[in-house]
Image (cartoon, rainbow, N blue to C red):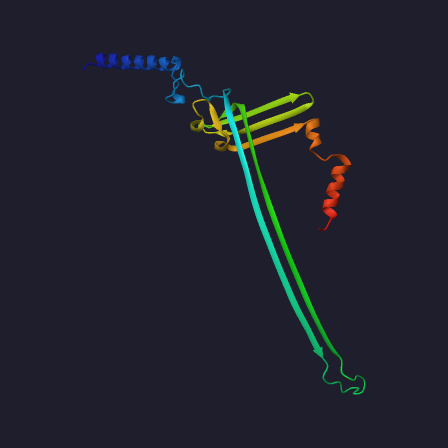
Length: 207
């Protein structure tokens, strides 16, 4: 093979590589997203995409403690000989005591609760391994009542369902907050002097 032919083949390969690279940059296929169709796939994948979080949190706690303490002691002293002053005591003194101490205590703690909600969160960051950092907030105002639901966490791309939802139990480092303010919320809370007195009595009362 002549030098001219080798040069021609090399130039052809360089041109083909350049064309392929240009096609890759302008192609609708993104190799960083893997084999996912940009037409049929509607799930969150990039920063700014939306994702619906299905929050189902159940709480069931139970703790039981029991203490039993018993202590008995007996003291018996008798002076059998007092030769310093034989007629000082008649009869010689004795001392007998008995002590009994018992303590019993039982403590039970049970708490159960459930919280369910749906919240649409936004992808705020994408980690190098493909995991999505999501954050969402919803505020509802009805007259003077205000309810705020907040959620954030890290979602694995593979845990997102086809309908673009993810279960809260699959979210890592999940944070869920539901708070409220307003007249309805205040009716279920102790406020002011009543709250202070209840806390003081609860702290002082020994039983």
